[in-house]
Image (cartoon, rainbow, N blue to C red; front, side, top):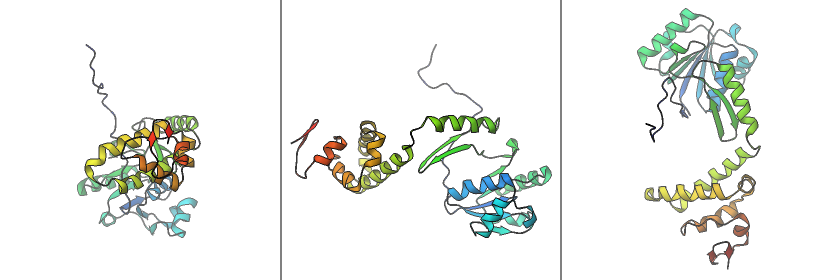
Amino acid sequence: MTSKYPEIQGGGSLILAWQVRNKKILVVGGGEVAAGRIVNVLNADAKVTVVSPRAGLNDEVAYRVDQKQVEHIDRKFEPSDLDGVDMVLAAVDDPEASTQIYKLCKEKRIPANIADVPPECDFYFGSVYRDGPLQIMVSTNGNGPKMANIVKKRIAASLPSNMGAAIQKVGALRKKLRKVAPLPEEGPKRMQWMSKVCEKWSLDELCSMTDEDMDTLLEFYKPGTVPTLAEVRLYEPGGVYEGPFLI
């Protein structure tokens, strides 16, 4: 018998957009893998501390240190480094040291990722495509990082070049809408109306939307209608909107 509900597929991960703004993240190691981890968490506005002897830093990590984008502790990891830390990213070529770090994190209930050791990871890093506010992560749940990168590139190649810009404009419109209709009970109506805008307007139209266009468009929120961009630009305050015509 076929179920009308989604089939459960075990073995996956709960993929989330983890907000780490201003969180304290410790990166242990200073090589190529650590460099990639640092970029990921700096892009998420975290406060990053790198623990590694200066001699072990590659050029990119040394650049982050010199530019004061991260704090640097010039020595090997010590257990006291975990004090006050919200997350740990270990990327060292020492399996014994990596396991020690993971065990200490488990004791202190600090989420940790031990590079290239899936059993010692509370979460994985996927292959990420970024276009402004748009982020798409592909995860193979630790099975094939290179395959994740291949899939990511194929997805990115299929997306319109203006997708990120369109999303940015939609985000600005949503902020304005919340000011127009701030009450919690307006939530479902806000979501439905925004969905109509995204479905009716093309990406190019969303990208070309100005602040003035947004303010005019918001006048149609209360009646729950969505005019075209052309109609928005022809609209005069006090006019009446009926179907595809402004009178």
